[in-house]
Image (tube, rainbow over all chains, first blue to last red):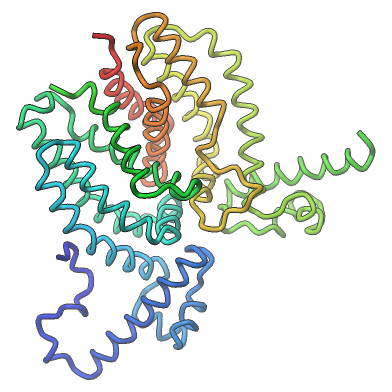
Length: 215
Length: 200
């Protein structure tokens, strides 16, 4: 299910060989992650300090730093875990579709469904993405690249089926679709739109975007 | 305006100017209300009696800036020539040129608009009425002149264009792209979308 193996400690193939120390370490990581997820959700990224997180996890600040280099690494690990949860579902939705629209809507139905349930965390992740450091940005772009590939695959299959023009710029198309997908979260945040409303808007936007690319 | 009102207005202007410079030079998260007050030469208390929060200060800084930009547009728009896509390109290029002059300020504005703790005094990024009406004018004009399909959904098209416009700032955030690179990316997107609104 996972597509980025960032957590060697989570490798479940060899649990028996894990030493007591390794187990304790993994337990610590999980406690930190769960406390961090809660605080980021409640207070946003800037509002939650490592000290708050350590306190909420019932451990020292030093113990948190033993597992994570800094706050942005901790935050990224939470986002990575979330991406891993939805990536496989998005992939399947895209692969099973018989039209571009079905593929795109299917993929983003998974994403909207997941993120609308935990909107504050998503808001924090988008907010951070505009001002984060270069290292953190590179890590984040890795996840996006995988989702982009899924989206491009849906579009390329559309070209192969003859649904889209052979000359359609699928990369540009994927970019614009991604732009509106992300922009729509504002409606969920500020106007409390439901997943259904977001998908219906996305479907309308797709018509505008695809109009010039249809064969 | 009474003396008190005048003083209040003067404080407001000083605070907004100080905040604008600090947000852009030092960063939004790094700037405290105290630093803003110090730079503006006013008391911390008077900042708080004028604005409810730092987010509100940012929101007003951006509003003030936009007033200048749109005064400029009022002069420019009547002179736009060429195909609808070209006119739109010009409008977005002017925006990119303007916003990248203080790019950190603008990125902070976008970032803050996603913050989970927004208060009622804040007009989030993306609620820019003037930009909407300007784009609509250009599209409607295109319908009249015949290079835009009459049945094109203008609202939806504006919505898609604005999403592309905003997201292109990522090039500035991630790669330090300049205004002309942002405008070039936008041109490509406009041409692509315009392909779909050609009358057939």
